[in-house]
Image (cartoon, rainbow, N blue to C red; front, top):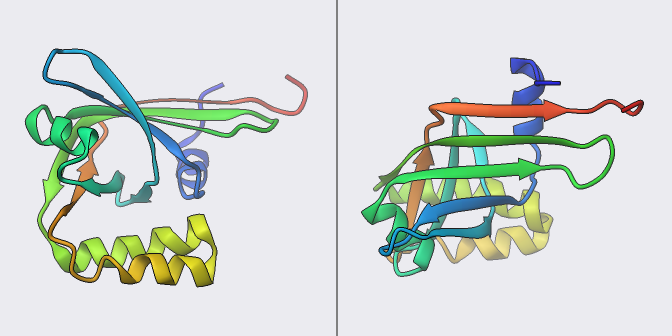
Length: 141
């Protein structure tokens, strides 16, 4: 059953590892696990400019992001839309500082985020979904 807007927001607020799918220079799909942060109706993620996913998004900015829970009751959301680069070092550091403790825990997360205070080789992307498919099951299903 599709999630309500409130259920979807609550689901996407969790620190779940997502799978980002991009298209490479040969037109082939490429997928990679990523952290993301849901804010303002968009998914925010970061990567090295020279990574395959970074190069793919900079050249072909349409992507999909699949987020799912791996334990019952199962739930998932697939977001697709343009992923625009956002050149804002302060926002990059702010978002990494939110994501890293959520995914790594407080101490390790703070140490990880400190590396992104000045990180010109990293690019922040805002994936603005044009389409969202979601579903959630109950314990009975």
